[in-house]
Image (tube, rainbow, N blue to C red; front, side, top):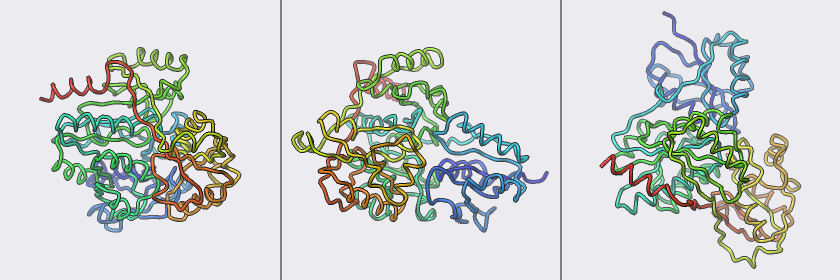
Length: 441
């Protein structure tokens, strides 16, 4: 039987993992190329031979997804594999229709085909959309487990935006590790809060190797997912975070709906800022589609590192988490909440944007006055810095998970705002984890 020729549609994460666990040693398939979307600057690279394995001595080229139909025809592709997240069901089927119209089959690889199995207990934290509050949930879980005397390691969803060979296995235990690995703002947004919480974080490209190394220094593993992807590692306890600001999205986005249906625990976050009717809609969907799940309710409370007097009445530029504001579809975040709470005067960020930052506003027209903390490359980080420094304001209210003061040379004071999980009543994470640990002895 002839090998099926495969194209994997990705965004430098799930695509590489699916290749590693399903295709790398599978002689029934030949992966001809990857395509890249969502993340700027990751096409034009090559998945290196050292990671691709003996069947791919030249590695595998990565193209821009815009070339999809031409690539299918040019390389006589038999099978298109869709492998990235936080995409509406409608968008997924548009991609499928393109592939089918070019003569290729179209598939999604699920958990059974892509899970790794750990020798240690695994708790996965996923979500129905990016920006729902996975990180604050993961940090709370790590703190609870650590207080019980357990050694915990966080394995984070991949963000390999640099040299893939060097990023095969990454271990972060200090801020110096972030510098050494030349982390982008997007990477720092995910790793820094865990480091502040004194947790060791693993990430990279080859998650089989990452998992085996992480197992050597922990009693339990917490999977901290990216976007709304499902876990790479088979969980013993599956927790999915829901966002009432986007009620209904738990049934409309890939693969967030899978996380919604797979979850042992559903955590409704942001109760303090949500509309009662949206919370009610979420509860009705839980009852209809996953009634077996334990439901936890929580507020997403803000913490500010400057006194109110330094914020109130000041002209403020608001900065927010990049992916949450862009493909996540949100138009506000912690920075906006803090500005409104402390009566700051919010300026129009778009007015001062330059370069690729300016293009972001054209691509995502729902963004108005808030500045997404985009920084996928040194050039883009510099453009973000120039945008901030051009802004006519008194302060910058930084609601991104990263501390921009460590990365940028701003010409005005930066107020750092962060979210933390504040659970409402019981059940809560403590009770859920106690039950889980009893079962695991």
